[in-house]
Image 1 (cartoon, rainbow, N blue to C red):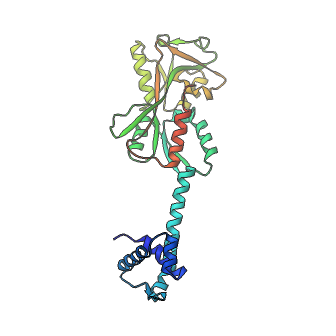
Image 2 (image 1 turned 180 degrees about the vertical axis):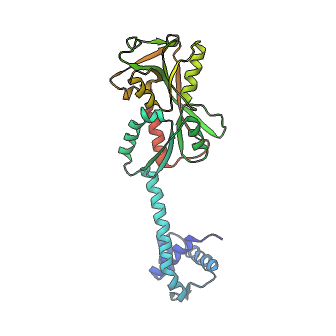
Image 3 (image 1 turned 120 degrees about the vertical axis):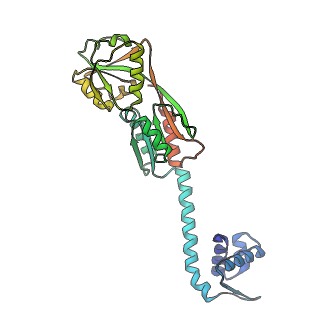
Length: 296
């Protein structure tokens, strides 16, 4: 049998008001209903808590001893409900999300700044990982939702494409390709490339297109992160094929040139567990990302 919280509330009101009639009125129940609550409570604990005659109502010695504990219990329940109401009303709470590092270098920090302004008391933990590990973090409930660049195959996950981010060339301003308005993939032949290694979803898309264009990749450096590729490109060590969203943090010594014939883009998607409700704090951030993470 579960703890009869309604009986505890009835017990406290009877103790404070000294009357079944007044307690019933305050709780908006009949006296019969109030009596049943007390009977269930006493049956639950196996002890008499209230002595009642036709004229008097008094707590037993056990009832007097139990009263402060009952009040603390109800106060704790009330505080818990108020906390839940606050979470719902103001979207408060700590959350964990997962994201591919390229978004942390690009547009996501701006969105997080807006979120922090609206919810200054919320703490956000960000797991910056490859797309494969972002998916795993969401599936294993290490993150409430994730941002990635690979479509998942798992049936238990919901995947929503938010924006398609085209690939561009990043090179130093004095590079032979820097003055062009656009560059065809086939024009990359013979140039030193700075490529992404590991399980990067961007690497897979880039290498697939280079292969379709019949280009033998001439790699000078292989790196794990976008920031490393841009740092090497700024030293004239090759050209990096990255995504357009990095324009927000483009260094002045670098040129950004669209890649065409064909235009290739990566889908940026939001992933979450299918059929599960996000916490109010996570839902507020999710809504903000869906609304603001769009084309440049």
